[in-house]
Image (cartoon, rainbow, N blue to C red):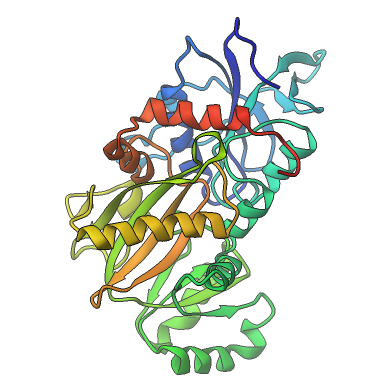
Length: 372
């Protein structure tokens, strides 16, 4: 469905969702909604409640910002229910009223973070409905969400990744002694414990010794029954953005950024990411030798291609003291507020926030649904 030359492009911005990253998705949506030029786009803001209901919202970016005292936004459950019958023909249903057609949309911008959205589920729904959308397809989205499978594919492509121990849903209770022994034999302490399929540092803990491991695993299991225990890497945290190349050409990498944490943070946790103080900084571009920065950029493109990503991704690395790089993870729908790392990387590369949004929509409009 390509937009005609004589009308605005109809974009459905979908946000919220059922995952523990519901509020962060709302914040991301606020940034994108503010950047979509009303002269070029007709926007349908669609929120997904924490119970999974799709609702037509007002889409006011100010109501989707982080409020005073760290108050987080959420999708209100009071709107009419949005349904997607097929081929982008949206309708909204309200109790006691005849369903109202919203017409077709040209493209969906799914700004969902975490399971039930970023993990290939909404991408599969949109593929079935034959609707174009921003972001990676089903496979890359699913792999990008599952840190264990992601590491296997990246390692298979020859990219160095952090060492880890997998704790499957059924393995912790009957086999905790084996897991503890495996961790101590593989890399010792400290370690990071995290849900395999979550983001925004939800459920992530730094464990200093074996006495803290069980509590950390249980905390991670509140978000995902599948848990990763990873080695703690000593080094710098650097990140790079990747965009699908024009007309399907070679992907492009941004400048490299670095996260600096003060003594108040042992790790880049939720508070450091979204409620930062003076002891958290982003250096863009990072102060790196030219050859190291170029290696980060090349490895970012390699990781993007290894997972069959499309549209956009952010690739996170550890730079160790000996100059070696490890891929920490790849995010197929990175944080997208104007102050998030991904848009800032591209702003320093020469693509400002509104232009970045335009490019993602244009890329999605050119790309067919189905096998490609």
